[in-house]
Length: 469
Ligand SMILES: Nc1ncnc2c1ncn2[C@@H]1O[C@H](COP(=O)(O)OP(=O)(O)OP(=O)(O)O)[C@@H](O)[C@H]1O
Image (cartoon, rainbow, N blue to C red; front, side, top):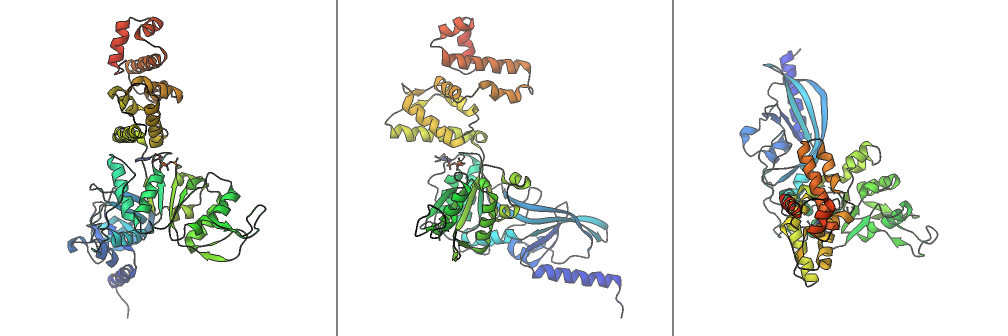
């Protein structure tokens, strides 16, 4: 008995539906107006609050081209409410034949999301989230309202920045699971502070937190540090052998700092540990089981390192299940102000002083680009508290510091000079010269004599540029 082509399509459709419904991954199809045309059972169970958003069947479509484009999704996006969701999987652009003709649909297949979500749902009351910039999931439905209720710990990471507050929320939320986290950001932004915050909020917080800087020691030393060695593995090795950091961190957390510096050979070894949860000591044969939560950090762009062939892609994806990027201090001006006040209090109390920063000096700090980020700001404040002679941290002190740091003010402006009116650039230059002169000369009179301008003009210009002498 022959079957009609319509029936054939119908059967094919049913088969596909069953297949998708059987799989423990999220599959859904949306058009460019964000209408959902199909979602499998797994997706419905996890995300659909209202049935009307979730058509069950493939609705008479016949896929005619399933391979057009494939995009790998691997990102965390914040919702407006500060919630987070991880997108990890693939997006396919497919063309389907419907009664109205061919229409393009995006098919999402998200595997890792479910892993993250399940772990998150176990531990937090994540109830709502959104995803990719171009796509909004239906409402998240929490399957596990029995959340752990211990209040999140945030003893160390101070911030007024909404971005960083969202990062902290995310960190607290993922802390309870063993999901791997890769923290990226410039030096001194607080990657280690965040790693410790995750550890403190985790169930492993009674066990060790072990940190290793993968860029600080030679490859062979790092290998034996990480994996340990057996009796007599190399000249100079301890007789009785030595436990490596993986073993020392057993049941706890291992923080792999500067992971971007990890030599290729060790990348292979690390990948194996992450896959098998076991290590073999250098010079040894016994396989040792380890139970370690990994948090990695880097101030390089690790994806770029992957693209350049310097970092293994498989390891990158293993480590980067939850990517977190901490923004540099210059991009969170509110933190420059807030952290300045925190560090001022801290060091006033430490050195029994009572010093304050003037508004003009504060404005200069807000304009500075802080290459060393929070670490640099903290060091700067500590030094000012110790070295300034009266109770005010003034413009001169800031300028002195900038000059010592080799901060040529011109370089602050260079980048923008060609993008703005000449008059503005000349004013910038004039301001720069006046700032340097303030630092160099002891009085307004001396400045005016050297610069060959009237003292009242010097004073007026200083006021104009917000540099109060
Ligand atoms: N939000 C913050 N609140 C308070 N202190 C902070 C904050 N961020 C960073 N710090 C302080 O700044 C210093 C640098 O922080 P941390 O070591 O975490 O930076 P990092 O990004 O890991 O740097 P690196 O890449 O150089 O290792 C530390 O002394 C830390 O206490």
